[in-house]
Image 1 (cartoon, rainbow, N blue to C red):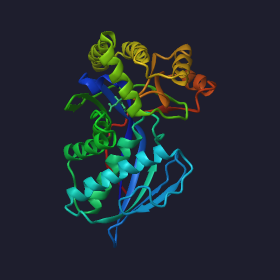
Image 2 (image 1 turned 30 degrees about the vertical axis):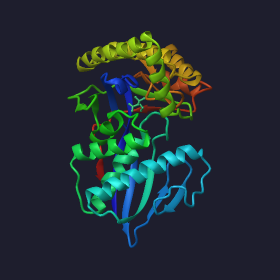
Image 3 (image 1 turned 180 degrees about the vertical axis):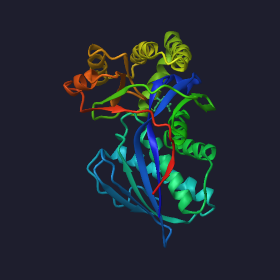
Length: 329
Ligand code: MEV
């Protein structure tokens, strides 16, 4: 039996624009997906989910994710989750040159599913790592990140940047620009507060919406480029440990993302609650449409304000997690 975990992440700056080659900066956070893998005697795959935000379900199948599902959560989310797990197992089988290996997997996660904290990337990275080690292969981080990206890319019909999978694999703060993925050296510990509306956006639809706007209007393409400029400034502020400027740029980024149509009433309500509570900055994180916002505040004020915001289901503090995928006992 082999167990691996991988962190979720949030975007400090640059989501959506990163899909068009602009840079993005993201931070792994101390919320993890944990996957237990055990070889079985046949060639089947059995997946048991104990996701805290996805009521438990078990699927046993031989390649058809529709088999024997008994769930009480929206089917598209489950199908997407199964697509990620199945793709990750294929990568592990390929790495171990064991195309017919059967596996029992248990997936546990304290990252809200589809809420913008990269639950899928964390599950993919932890699954590839646990399953490949269980099959006798230790993948180096670069190879693991690459394989994780291929899974997300396929499930999301080619509409994924490398940010989520790279960040979940290597941990810490990362910068991604096209194929160029790197860890940022010694980032400051930012006082993250996350607000979660209990929902999820449809990444594919949201990415397609931005693509259409960008093709139709020059000023939408300019907005995407402006996000890239903002990210470059944000990187400098982050390197200087200038939390005030990082926060101001997060506010600005939220405005630009709203202009691109990817915010939501619940996300705006949480962002404004955080700002009014005195946060240094607040923005949606990842695809948008619903899910999570991230604010910077080292006092309790933002968390308290979010708890009293009707659109916020839960609010919590998050720490930068400097560790990516790791083997667990
Ligand atoms: C989704 O987590 C973030 C997007 O930028 C898409 C991507 O980077 O893959 C919207």
